[in-house]
Image 1 (cartoon, rainbow, N blue to C red):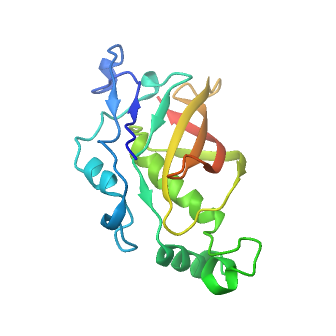
Image 2 (cartoon, rainbow, N blue to C red):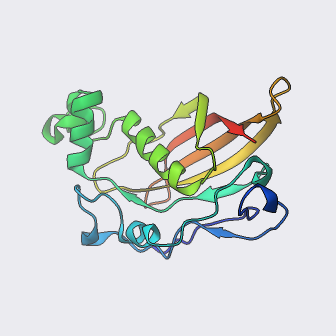
Length: 200
């Protein structure tokens, strides 16, 4: 696998430089995880490389436009992580025991959908560097077309679909964002439409 993600965004080195344009890289040169990823260090080799890249500029409201797309680095999902998460937050047999999961609708160990949500949030925070943080106000829709499995390598594609200034609060705006979470096979694991609050 060799995926290179870039954000076509306006460069911002503070609030006074929102007019310049350019590209902000979000990943290095991803390769398949192989033995580089473990449950204790659940990222791909590409993710580790991306972590050493210079941090992208922090983005302010004036740097955002409808249609902008952000790509993340990759995240390796191990069986131990799936089981640990599920024991804490979604204690069902098909999320915690591979043998029992084989007799379930999943035909094998599957991550909780909420685990996939958490990984998605992790990747979004690292690939959408908003100056005032990512503040969610709700989710309009979420679906899991197929489960996340042990050994999956997840990445996200996030697209801004709407920006609407708040009429009563001039210091903020509402942003809709469509986030698709893909596996290493380029098949969708999660489809989420969320609402964010952006401070100007």
